[in-house]
Image (cartoon, rainbow, N blue to C red; front, top):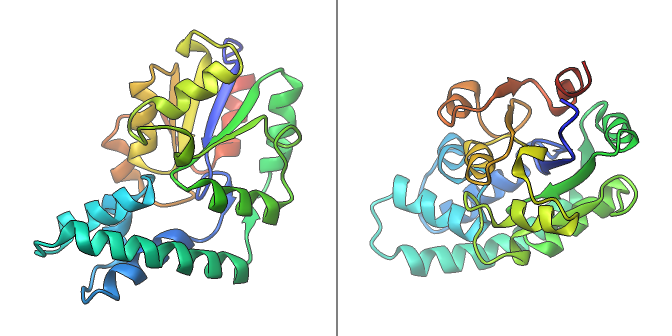
Length: 227
């Protein structure tokens, strides 16, 4: 698959192993408002989305409240504070073999972009905890703060392409651990969309978006790209 010039990887659950901490925090702040949503519900309706949208969609799908915007606004304010504390205290790592895989991609001239539904502050905090730097392990980081429209709109992938003067989406691969990652890739016209089972959603949930491949983890892409 030598035509691929750019890979766009989701962060949490795809390249960053944080044990669904962000979605556990979403669950926590929603339930603090008097609800009892499950983690499975949060993962089903919120995975991969900008986090205010994730909270709104979980409330819409899983509760009968009529004050969704008011509660979502409050929960999102609490979420930002709670996640900052959680990430300060948590052990964050990458998945086994990811850094070596990144080195191989870059050795083949393939650009690596991380994109995420996190805001810039959270995403950069994760990079710092991993000791990753833009220009070293990865070539760019694009967050929900960088675009008008989050996933599943193609804005983040289109921005990634523009950064590296790539005009043909047939040269782009998108991989992520949620259905909305795959839909984002398809909406962008990516040559390949990849679901991974290392994060938020299970095989059945990923299959709903009809990805080209579903892999156990992102490092299995090596066999697809280079063999």
